[in-house]
Length: 328
Ligand code: DGY
Image (cartoon, rainbow, N blue to C red; front, side, top):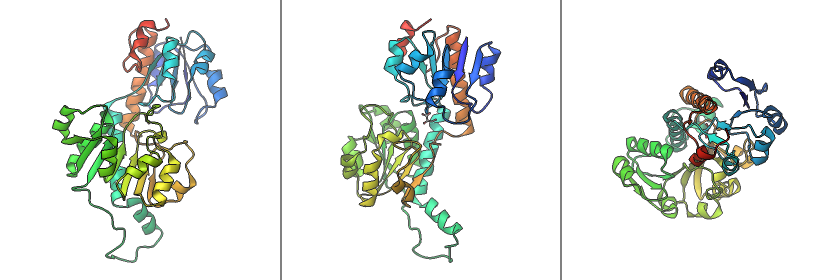
């Protein structure tokens, strides 16, 4: 059985594939694989270990050949893969959700909320530049979190972990979800709201929805206009949930006071206005970049390949119904 890995991943989990006797090829370049490289590498393989930077559509699947059984995506998000096209072809797609990844993303979200509230990045930059002249009453005034409202857009696994941490800061939490979640409300002290209500009443809005046709550019000109004046936006979900042009305008007009972004509309490109804006904190899609999370992702991505190629149902199949119609 042949496996193609589109880029080397941290840890030694790939070794397990070799120990199972599989023929493993790993892209030799430590960068996002080119389309040509991908099409060449996947020819004749039984499984692909892909990254969220690899676009895999029906044509790519067909280029691999009819023996392709599995795409094991080293990510929680799977918007880089055409799931419908995979299911139609009987190809299993697995992802890597785990507490380790979810906690890492929730912790990064909080690092960004705190950094925004207390202007940590601006203050650090000014101090290093030699601008610190001694204590002053009015430099880098930020905002307390206690008593403020956090809006969690998408109370799934990561959103819940973000909401739980808000209790420690004594914040009020509003959330959106397909329908109210009484258990979460009891456990986390959160309050269900429509997106409009949440945007109008939150001091910090944190996005935790997957990228789908419905959520693409969910934050656009209209939704930014509904945000509470002077509030903050945090995005550790997917860049395309936010229309970056509309974000630039919302910042320029002071409709919102700032933003913290781990993901971008057109990665790795970022609007020059965002880069130049002191009110924005940027990190390069590292919300899940902890050793613990990446190790778990590697473990799960490899386990899915071993299980599937041995005929065992793997964990974390994105579209469960494919199992009964899977390629053998
Ligand atoms: C994911 O897993 O989807 C993150 O964006 C990267 O780990």
